Image (cartoon, rainbow, N blue to C red):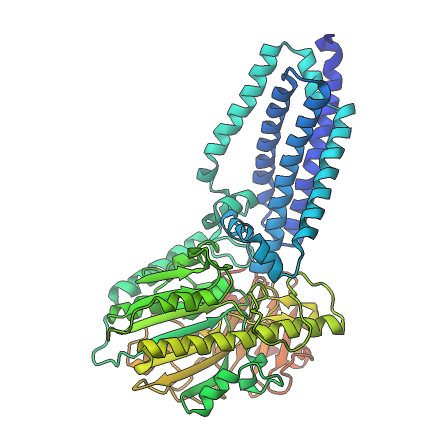
Length: 623
C-alpha cells in the first residue's frame, strides 16, 4: 500500500533527524575526548564531521537500495541493521585505534600498523596476556547488541522504508545511486585533501605520512620543518670526510624502552644483565653510564640518537650517522625487531642504507620476537674487510615484546600495557614482567655479539648499547611510555664496548650525558668529523654545553649541567605549572623545589625553553 508523499514527508524528516542525531553521538563523543584528553587541534572538528557526513550519506544510499530489494520486510530490516552495525563498528575501531595509538605510541594507529598486528593477532594477544576466546566473546556480544539494537530501532523508525514507500522505485534507485556516486567521488579525492596534516583521524589511519609534521606527541610547523630540512640537506652536501680515520666496525644495539636503573650492571638489585657484567669483567667495556633521552617515545628517541638533534630540531630526513659513515665507505645494515616500516614513516628517517630488515619483513615469527635478529644475522656473510655499521633494535624489554619460555622469571608477572591498577602487587607484577624482558635483552645481546664475532665483525669494532627511551612501571601512576619526563622515562644506558684496535673511548661516568652526544662520541673515537649541524658534543672533548634538553608532548624541560645540584626543570606548557628537582640529592624526584630556586635562575631556564618550544603539540603554546 502506498503512502502519499505529503503525509509521510514530515515523519520521514523527523525520523531522519533522530537517526542522524544518534549516528553523530559516537563521533561527537570521540571528538570531545580528542580535544580534551588527546589535545587535538580544534580545526579537526569541521573536517572530521565532514568525513562522518560522507559515511552517513553512503549508509543512506545503501539503506535505500536495501529497501528496494524484493524480499521480506524483516530480511530487509536485518540487512539494514547489519549495514548500520558495520559503519558503527568501523567508527568504533577507528576511534579505538586513535586512542590506543596515542597512548601507546603517541600517534593514532595507522591501518598498515594495525593490519600487521591483526595478522598476528594470536601472538599479539598472547604477549598481552589476553585470551583470544575472551576477545571473540566480547566482540560477538558487542556485535549482537549493536545489530539487535539497530533492528529494534528500525522496527519503529525506519526512515528509509518510509522514503521508499513515498517514492517510485526508479526515483528511489536514482537517489540511492546518486548518494553512493557522490560518496565515491569524495572517497577517491580523500588522500589529496591531506586532512591528516590537521589531525583528522581517518586520514591519519589511512595515510600516516600526512601526520609526520603534525602528530599527537610533537608538532613542527611546515615552515620550520622546511628550514630544518634545508640545513640538513646543505650539511649532507657540504660534508667532506676527514683523512686518516680508523674505520672500526660500528655496532649500535638499541633496546626499546630500556631504562638504565633496571640493569644490574648499574647496581640494580636483580641480576638482569649478567652478560654485560661478564663483558665488563673481561675488560672490554670502556663506558658504562646513563644518558638522558630527548623524549619518551621511539620516533623522536631514535631520530635523536641517529641525527644528534633534540625534539624541536629534528628534520624529516636528517643528516644522520648512517649518512656520515657511508661517506667514509661504510656499509650500513639495519636489523630491527618490531615494525619500523609501518610505524608512521619511521623507516624514512634511516635514509639510504645497504640493507634494511625489520619485523614486518618476515612472516615466520611474531613481529616483536627478537629471534628474528638472530635469524637474519645467521644469513649474514663473513666480514670481507669492508668497514660496516650494524644497528640492531630489540623489543625484548618492551611490553609488547615476546618473552621466550627459556627466559627465567623473577616472579609472577604479566603485561602492563593496559594496566590501570597501582596496588603493590600489580606494580610488582609489572616489574617482574619488565625485568624478565631486560634479562632476555641481555641474553639476545650476548647472542648477537657471539654471532658477530664468529663472522669476524668484532676483530675491530665499537659496540654501543643504549635505549631509545625509558619506561614507567607504576611510578606516579604511570605505566609504559609516551607520558611523563621523569627519570625512569628518560634515563637510558650508554655502554661502549671496544674490540680489537677500536678506540676504547674512555670517559668519566659522572659526566651528564644526553642521547644526542652518543653519535658524536662514536665519530670522534674513529677520528671522523662531527657534522656542524649536529647539536650533540663528543664526550672526549671538554663538556661545555650548559643544558640537556628533553620534551614529551606538552612537557618541556632541561637539566642544568652547570648547577651544583644538577637541577632538572620542566614546564607543563598547557597548564603553565613548573617543576624543579635536584638530581644530586633527590634522584627519585619526590620533592618539587620550584619555590626555593632563585627567580633569576628560573627565568634563565624559561628563556632557554622558549627557544626549544618548536615541537609542542598542535594547539599548545609555551607560556
